[in-house]
Image 1 (cartoon, helix red, strand yellow):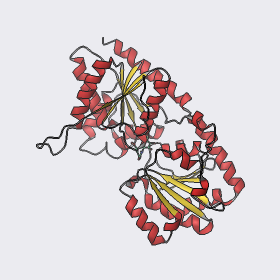
Image 2 (image 1 turned 90 degrees about the vertical axis):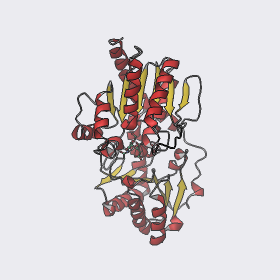
Image 3 (image 1 turned 45 degrees about the vertical axis):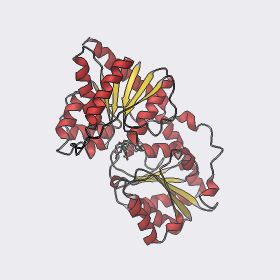
Image 4 (image 1 turned 120 degrees about the vertical axis):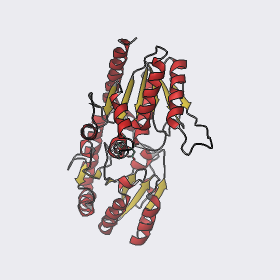
Length: 379
Ligand code: GMT
């Protein structure tokens, strides 16, 4: 099948999922066309089956805001026509489902019917999408999608609560490529990060408020009082500067390493002993799953869809949002004894394998088939 994928190309879960999905689909023989404003960060290699079409938004002095949706929908129309695309898959409702709908309508004027699958990722519903300024347009474009999927059961329920949704929402969880992790890295350079007697605690995110970065620092502050350890902070975003100041204040700057954005998180996770994810809200928590497949147990909040990924007492522990005390106590349980840590590490990887792409990809393919067949009725 020829599939056009629209996503955010930046560091962020929805773009990562869309990119990894596109790569996996291309490996299965589908032709995949990414349409977005920059080459997606995890899309390193283009080939016969993977194409990238850049959306340009020309500057014009009259505009205070450049009309990205307009440029995107026009680019979609051109790409779909030129490459005979069979199906459009948009990730993150805002504004992708809206632009996708407009493209569909323009194509229909020329008697071309391209089904649109919309995948909801989280903040497009729980944070941004529900804002009254966006809600009518988001509701409309979800309802106008041929098939809607969400990355967790929790996100599906939240969507049905917040919006007036007419059709079905199908849950297809996020995934990892377990095969990639079946051999251990030879370049896992733990010694660069910590001494042998230290545990390594890691956090990866885009450092937005919703990630509760100060909680990460405060939990680590408590951990290192009892267990010698280092904290590795991967990513960048608005909360980073404040986090560095907080580390100074708490006197732990020497034990916290801020690495910035990285494309090689597996090489960091492979020597991590614990992952911290205290988020305010999280539709799924892809970063937790990526930690788990790298044998890293997770201390998280119990927000949103995280309990669908991190299992209490098995792959880690979950606490109420903001309960730093409980998170630190749980972390000490996991890190305290080698034997306990070993068990949690093994459980983490075992559970993560349930989300292997080999199990999830056929579900997307089935959705595509269904949307494509339904579209034939219109032709
Ligand atoms: O949460 C982020 O920082 C990024 C955000 C995104 O849209 O890129 O992630 C959302 O989608 C991910 C992939 O489906 C999920 O794993 C994240 O839980 C979700 N984030 C939130 O719901 C806050």
